[in-house]
Amino acid sequence: MKKFLKVLALVLILAFLYFGFTTYPKLDLISGFSAKSIASAHFIDNRPKELIEKTDNDIKMIDLATNAINDAEKFATSNVYGLKERKAIYREGLGAILINDDFDISKPYLLPKRTKLVNNLPFPYGNNEPKDSAFANVDYSKLKKAVDDSFDKNGGKTKRTRAVVVLYKDKLIAEKYDTEFNKDSKILGWSMTKSITSSAFGVLAKQGKIDIYKPAPIAEWKNDNRKIITINDLLHMNSGLEWEENYSTICDATKMLFQAEDMGKVQMDKPAQFKPNTHWNYSSGTTNLLSRILKAQFKSQQEYLDFWYSAVIDKIGMNSMIVEQDMSGTFVGSSYGWATARDWSKFGLLYLHKGNWNGEQILDESWVKYTATPTNTSEGKYGAQFWLNAGGKFPDVPRDMFYCSGYQGQMVAIIPSLDMVIVRMGLKEEEQGFDFNGFLKGIIESVKK
Image (cartoon, rainbow, N blue to C red; front, side, top):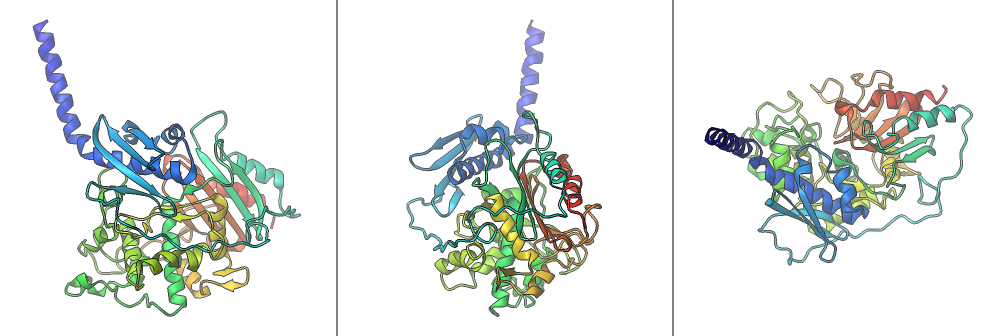
């Protein structure tokens, strides 16, 4: 018996040491992800905690968190085995912010001033219900099957699609939502938000207020080899700056999103590994640095907050959209944009029509072309904060497709040759088994040429 107890004690000690070395360092990130996810989904989209836990937070390790919501004071907390509790607070108009112990919640803050689009037009150019449309060249039964096949049946979790919206020739031809979701559900786009950030630069460029080919206006770089990095390099993810983006482990991206007060500064402080325009490297830190640079273009915080909405988001009637901030008051342009699937499709429509929105040229055509032109060294898969199919990633999809893409399989696909926008929101991406090529192919083949 004594021998057994000694062995048991040794096993427990080893298990504790293993936990300490492998899991404990991750607890702050786990509880941070969970608290932020719970607060955002609950207060932005009114989802109950149980639904968030079994869907949004149904991720290995994240599901270890214990969560609580305080509706009266509008915050959520999460911990893992009682350790490393994190808190995310909600502010109407700003969304949720993951805070640390030094954050002063009593400090006054500004809200974006928004002018929501109100007209009598049907969706997508207005917010009234879409008009019925029937195209002779669309096989609607085939289209319905392609959309239906992207959703799970009988409570399965193999596809995990939440929403699909298909626009063809400016008309809604297909729309479907999973249980618990509908046309008014606001869904996190994750890295699709990068494309929103790019569009803000596009408007500034159109207004002649910024030259993306000049060195980035960062004082900290003026005396070292980073001084030659341009905004163009940053938009193309081709700056040469050091960065690791691997969501399966503790990396630059996860530490930035769930620990940093000023997310843009994380990438700003990184050294240059390569000369600009020689090594493409996907970096959420780069996009948050771009958001920080954008902020410096305005005389006040209020002007910065307002610009994102007045220049693009509200301009095209994405009235549901909320872009959340970090603790420094900078928009998390890499990851934290929330909107309905319909509103995400409006953004795709803006780019489908080369920056023109119902007769108003919001972005120059040249900017949209720039956006969809392959970045040097990306092998045809990336443009300026948009992904591309120029390299044939999706073999059964036209090569001119360019798209917004986000964690867990968010997508706004823009296919100019077919006059089509396809939105898919979900919880599973290609690497996890969702067949994007087959999904897109099925929809495309329902439209006869």
